[in-house]
Length: 148
Image 1 (tube, rainbow, N blue to C red):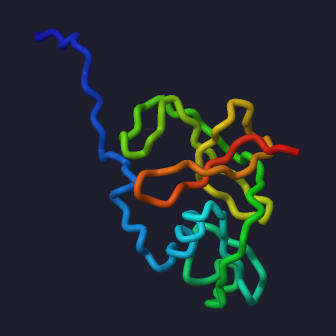
Image 2: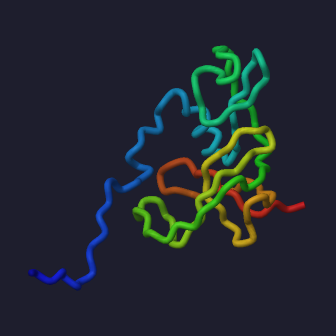
């Protein structure tokens, strides 16, 4: 009977998550990234039923209308869910471990997958948008503690 190798095993990954793998020229998200390059958070709003939505889609989820426009979001919300990640991310992401991944419910209603920047942020905490710079690309929205 062979003994198991006691040396530390290299962790296998299915795929490295790297933001540069994605084509940001998608016409459905282009307006979002254009606004993000100016550090403005925008979401979609239906012209027919006035419902807000995020992530971007070519039609309204509530009424199926094609009358979708972009509006500035308040940039404020509440932490809906969060987890701390201890695995090292791909260097292209610029994340130092540990980092917090969260779902933030915006004041307008939609939920956004993001990172939290403040240690004081917990589920139910009020937060506001900030921006994490990326070399050669539009910054990404991140959220930290809300200021009064």
